[in-house]
Image (cartoon, rainbow, N blue to C red; front, side, top):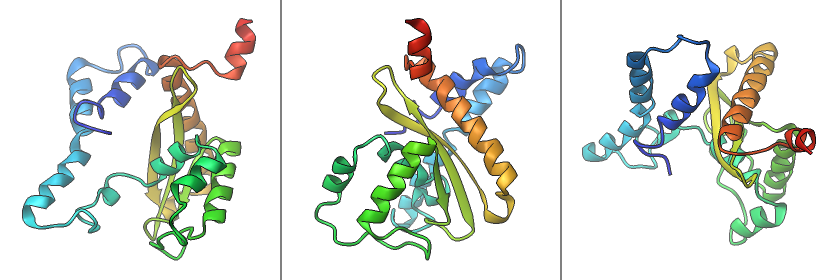
Length: 188
């Protein structure tokens, strides 16, 4: 679960990917502090804003696409087991997947492409893209994402963001001890 302690891990882990001297210690500290801001949504509870309300829920600050990127690490049987007691999935927008078969097919697509995409499935006008982060056991343990208004997510930008997220996800995975098939075969 994300916390004040774990949110800063991503910017700190990605810092070595930047050019030498690009980050000063104060800038790194500000970046780590800013990564905690999404957790401030809990303040709404004190004002009676329920967790499932759009303003109280992490919907504005956390992307549901993380769940898709993480779930793609599960087998079809494991996904079906998670939803065994649900006949239909909750519809949030006109684009939300509501059948288990569609969800399983989407997870297969995410596994093939290596990236998860949210095309207004959670919030109208918002598109998200996410890449998995794997640990030394090759298990998906986290995801990193980018959210953008629909009109700004052009095909060109999507391709750029996909490449950047895949590269960043691979770099962070490597730091966590993950050895991709390409690295494994090169080392043997």
